[in-house]
Length: 120
Image 1 (cartoon, rainbow, N blue to C red):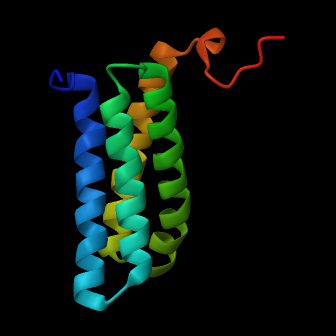
Image 2 (cartoon, rainbow, N blue to C red; image 1 turned 120 degrees about the vertical axis):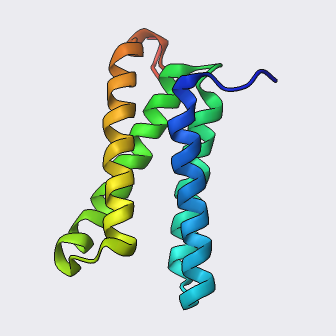
């Protein structure tokens, strides 16, 4: 397998950070929610990074959706608590990933190539 292109690096990095953060939240505070949320969203981001070379449109669609949900879930918590760790950091990561994936999705967007589009 060829190494991922430069377009994949951000999603791979964000995915790894989310996974490590979820594991750290579980280790330090026993938070199962952190473990499931961090590892789950991290796995989706890593998956989108690995998909970039084969299907960029689907990869950036997955990355945009994952980072959008991540940001939507963590931003209200950050605004309420004003704590940088972990809510501020995750909100920042999610927002950066959403902006990047949204930009890349706009570059690759082709509605005719969507895998779930009806052919009727």
